[in-house]
Structure formats: structure tokens, C-alpha cells
Length: 386
View 1 (cartoon, rainbow, N blue to C red):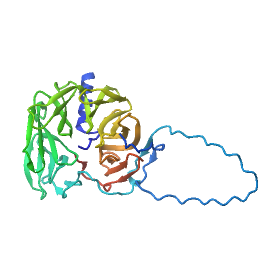
View 2 (tube, rainbow, N blue to C red):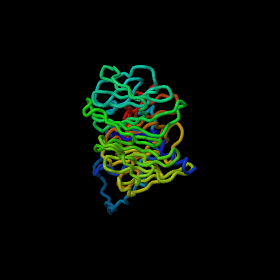
View 3 (cartoon, rainbow, N blue to C red):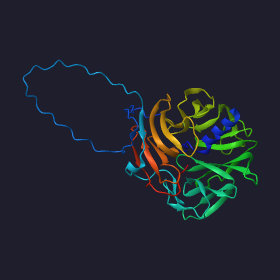
View 4 (cartoon, one colour):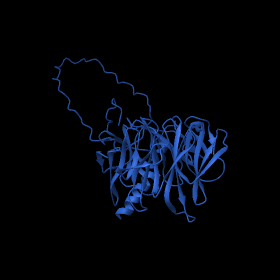
């Protein structure tokens, strides 16, 4: 599953619950050079012409050569994204929504019928999935390649898929007539072309359920046992009769394919700290109070992170950290509503300049910080899929 962004339910729910309760990189990658709030550059550029060096004509004695002092970078590259200045590159290579049409990934462009608000989209092999608003709640539509709805699953709030889009998991919750959440959740899992049917399990007496990933045949869920209590990580293997709570991983925010999880450690006014833990033991590998862990690249080598405090319309920064050490590799500033890995080397950022302004999905390279537009800058519905 592509890691989710800083504005997703998993992060918001974890922060909200904590607030109520209390009141990496490739081996060959080199550290980027420093750029103080530089505007994002294109992913590729032509080299500058080499300056010619005239032959030496002076007969004066040559000075004794000296060893130049080494300049040590004082920190990672920090890049300010100016959407109006970015060049346009190729379209996103993962599923995304433009207007009411699901694009990207494997499969044809598919238009979601109806006029309900679309909250999330995903691909499941040759089918498309969409969570749409229905009354005070939601439902999931399964749509074939011709845009025909083949199934409606009531109450589904969120979808995650495996990295190859050949399996999907989704979670459903019940609401009162007033729209208030009721206790309990149902987990579902299915494979492409209906192989094995739809498997499901009830997770009773939980609140704030949020899916975090589908890796190595296991589905991961964040949920709390009381409405105003901290969340814990749950693990479910489709086909088993129950989901197991991993008490050693409290307040989970994201999980990786290599058995690690981001955990909200502390939350205070205008600040927070998060830690990288092992699963299922919960051993802390490192801690940061500069960023919140919100996701991972598919290989788990890079942590996707947001600002240390998240509130309001969008995140002011998106960052990439070395998963081994927690060291900041790159930081981009702007207005970001989603930050998701496209692959092990690139992040996709759903960016705009504020509410009601044109938006674009921006591709940024982790190793260099360079960015480009992956979709045209335009108004209208735009989402990066699961």
C-alpha cells in the first residue's frame, strides 16, 4: 500500500484521540547539498557549458599548492514549491482521481457514475473502488472497466491496497441517524477477480477505526477501545477469525512493509513527537520532535513525514527522513493535502495555494529535492488514490 498523507484519517484520528485523552534511502544515495528555501527546480536540466581555461603564459613562479578546506553541509535541502514555476512531467504512476474519473495505475480511465462526493479511490486489478458519501455516512462502489457499478458495500469509510493493486482491504463502521459513530468495525479483504471471495471479520467495541496498510498478507488497523482513549495497532490475516491487538504499538500513525510503525509519542500545544517502532515488539528505533511520521516508501527505507503539529486546511511542509536514523533528507514547503510515495525514489504531493485555488499533484525526487507537475494546475476534484 502506498503510504498515506499527513491529512489522512489515520493521522487526524491519532492526533484527535491523543488531544482528547491529554486535554531508508538507497545505499548509494549521497546527502543532498544545502538549499536555503530554494524554489523547486525541474527533475532534469541541461549542464552548464564548461568554461574554457586558457593555457598558462606567465613565467612567474607557481604558488605552492594548498589543500582546500572541506565544507560540511549544515543540514538537508529545503525547497519552497512555487506551482507556477514548475515544469510538467509525466502523469502519476499510481491511481488518482481527476474530476470524477479514476486515472493512473494499471487499467483504463473509469468515470464514477452519480453525483455523490467521492472521498477515496483505489484500483483492484481490473476493477475500481470508490468511497462516496451516502446520507450521513458512506458506501463503497465497485466499478468495472466500463464504468458500471457492480457492487455497493455500505458503511465503508476507507480502503487500502497492496502495492501491486491485486488485493484490497477496507473497513466499515456504523453510524447513528445523527451521523455519530457507533462502537465496532468490520474489516473486509478481497483479491482481484474475486479469488477466494470477500473475507471479513468483526472487530467489536472499538472506536476511531482507521486502516494503515496491507503488507505481507496482513491488514493493519488503528483503533481505540473507548471513544476518548488512545489508539492501538491491530493486525489481521484475512481468513482468520479475529484481529489481534498489538499493545506494544500505541497511537500508530503509519506502518511499513519491513515491520516498522510510526507512533505518536507525545502531543502538546503546537508541538508533538513521534517514534519509529518495531512490530510486534514495539522497540523504539529513534524519535523525532521535529516531524510527525505519516508514511513510508514501498521498500520502507524512507519515512514520509509532516509538520510536528497538524491542524487546518493543509500541511505547510512535507519531508523525507532516513528510516535507519531519522535524519532529515529533504523538506518541501507549500500547502499539501496529501503526501504519498509513488515509488522508492519519488513522493507525490497534492498541492495548492489554499482553499479554492488551482491544485496539482506534484512529483518530487527524494535524493535531489527537485519537483515537477504530474498533473496540470487546475481547479476541480483531485485526489491521490490508495
